[in-house]
Image (cartoon, rainbow, N blue to C red; front, top):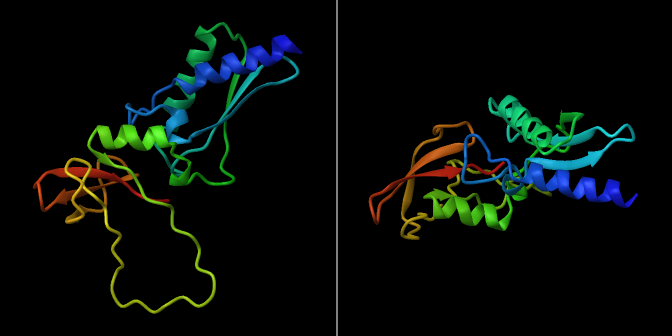
Length: 171
């Protein structure tokens, strides 16, 4: 049993190092996309990934890279599964992942929206969450486009330092 446990730890370590193809400053573990790594009774390493969006175009690349790295580490039989339930949430981004996003000029998301309990208040205009600038920290920012380079990011601009930046949307 000790060798299996050691194998699981090693396999997980290998899978945790895979960078996200769209946010390469983050690993799949930082992003919270790597859900689990285990070894089946037949010796197959099973890695589980949850996409940030159900139609995430990067999933095929993530699966291929996790499988390739595990095989390169000496695991002959590898299976990478997509797990959709529960769905991914920005709350799964680690503290290290949030720090890395900010260090690379991308505003990390705040807490994911929670379902309302009780009556839902009538709001006649869109509510705006303050998104601080990752460069200067100012809250005087504005969204310039709901869609950025990838589906999970929006484009924002800081009115204080006048710099544009990307923002990872809450899910």
